[in-house]
Image (cartoon, rainbow, N blue to C red; front, side, top):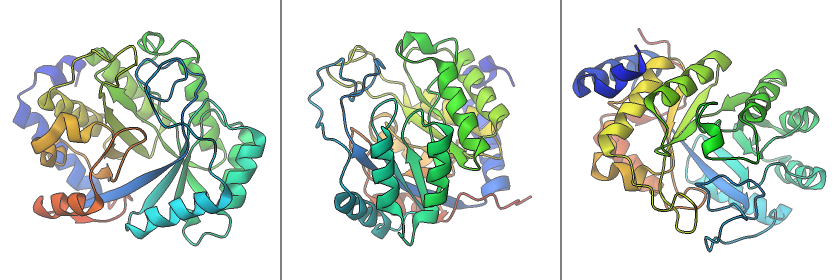
Length: 307
């Protein structure tokens, strides 16, 4: 299929194919993850959509890397919600070596550390290896959009640098979670190109974030996506990445609202539950109810191989 096929194809036909592919690979299971914001704000990057950039006045709560006790408390709280994975997320382009050491010391010995994800920016190979040894099994680093469109949303980091971080994570044996943010002004070709890049890299999980305007950022006045366009984007990624987990994350409450149950028809097999980095999300109880009402059940994001 070509980019215009996803934009113009009959909506129900598109969802029917996406549903078929989801069931073939993941059956009727929906994977739940959540995140812990372990370091907030003051990021040197100038991403035009981001509340955490120090270039914009957004009123965001700012704090340094959590200490070992607080970090473990936050991770334990997330695990008690019954999710399959917890992601530890730090703002900024790169954690310092002491910060990385603190993080690793904080998670060592956690009984759940085999299901920990890290989102720490452009981590060098040595630090990625140390994360593996500490028990992290997946690294998250979004490409955000296509290489062509990326300079329109960030000028302080190259798209190729982001791609290289993904390659380094795979090289040391980490699974990779990488996706994008949609509704920034990108075209359907940009969305198609991003999906093809992620497919070629072989990512394990693809987070789909739907743009939600943040006051104080340069994109504060940008109109939101329609629910149908958001669902078409989800279907695009399911159809182009049939073996990868398609995980719906930020923007779900505001963009999809009372149509969020359709994400499973569009091919999603995973959700981020709870709050996002800088915006509120849904409680795990609400998401459990959504999954049950959709005739699905909570499980891992491992492919089933269902025919």
